[in-house]
Image (cartoon, rainbow, N blue to C red; front, side):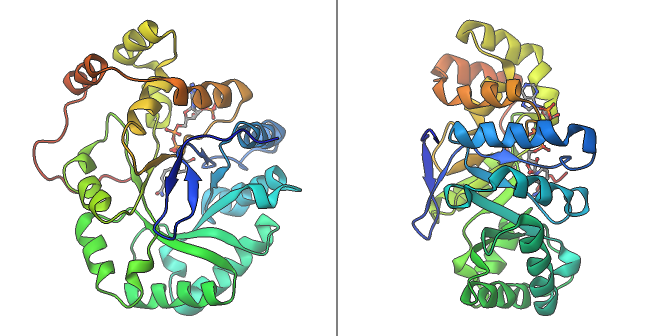
Length: 281
Ligand code: NDP
């Protein structure tokens, strides 16, 4: 049984949960594999049915962990994977997608992203994505690590407006996108997928977050996640390798940050006052 949680609407009209699950660093160590699969399965049970992976993670190993986690329940999961910029030519995306499908044990990827911009012209990559769509191998495509001017450029490319999301670094410590990329995306109805929403674990130990968490009888991770998804059009994809962390993250949806909490967070992690280049990990 899968519990249902708050959703965000992609431009195509598809609704996806605002809290999904990341998989970076999964599939690297066979001793952790059973826990990783169990964590993803539990997350799906709890409604975090969007799983973000990439051909890059553990050189395909994370896609294989994902395959185990979604086995027997493919239709209830929204699979996001990413192609490396070195594979972003028309022929390259075809080959890379085929390999990802095999590792994922599925016949289609729900959302296929360009991991970051490389040397291939955007028009060529988008052309490849559109062909994959026609073949039914991917249902939608999007981008990752695109700054506002990259998004502008994409909008000018044939079929560029079929983009469904831009996956970027967004958390309390890295909130430069609050200045322009988020408003730009919101105006156009393109949700942003926030990666590293708990700062790769750092925010879960932050004393300023711990103080706010105490008032909510919550964890610092929950405060960081509740902040990330506080506004519509944001999807957070924390990575959790244990059942304890998965349950903890899911409970972030039950937290309502007050105006006083938000003001305190703005003092501790000041919003950008000017445009900054997009940060990337
Ligand atoms: P996260 O901010 O999700 O942090 C993950 C770390 O935080 C792990 O060490 C995890 O530990 C720990 N953690 C998670 N939940 C809790 C909790 N409730 N309490 C305490 N610790 C917790 O960082 P990621 O960089 O992994 O980002 C999330 C996902 O975003 C990635 O997995 C990947 O799918 C995607 N991503 C995309 C990028 C891109 O370029 N497009 C770049 C980076 C990430 P444990 O594993 O032990 O549970």
